[in-house]
Image 1 (cartoon, rainbow, N blue to C red):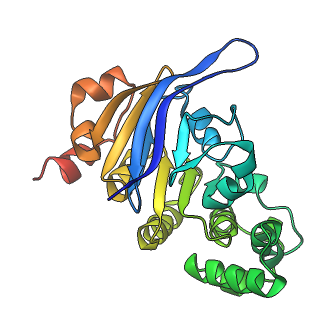
Image 2 (cartoon, one colour):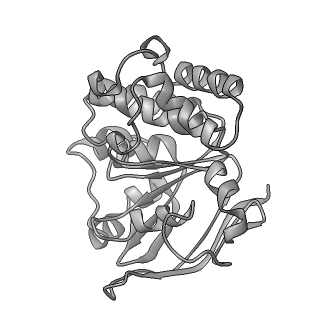
Length: 248
């Protein structure tokens, strides 16, 4: 399978001089799911904001399906790479759920009819179709998260990038979210502190620490390596390793 996403020596320094990324390089095959793990302040969110041109210079550090990250391709890049932010309120701002989910495809040039069709399909995918006419601010946090994902899926992206999607979810909502992500036939990049979620969704993970990739490998092997976990300030929930990882 061809390399769908290629990142080569990606470096980024904020205007205040803080170097958030230092020589990041990795590939992602089409249809694969990749976890991005690491402590707070490691550079994970900065990294994913480069993937659809929100941050950074448009240059040859990133290639998507052999498409170069240049200004002329920015609209296509943002259609192809859908980013779901940590706070769903950053993405929901229209009067109704349906209008919110239609906003993306309409902005990318889909007709009103196609935008409606895509929005309904996306809401069905996340189990929120019956809330079409509800105001987003009346939804629970877990429902808002689903609608935010639908609002990205409605534009038919080929790569879905999620930043801490399980944060602030109750166990039932978290389970529903995992099942939704597992059902998608799409490439996924998952940035998360929820290591069991990464284990369930992403066969492979990279560990980012201090703006660099310190590990790249099979998620289960990374999470069962005490040295790697300690060096990168990662920790599984109490009892999880005993019941879910070591039994094999």
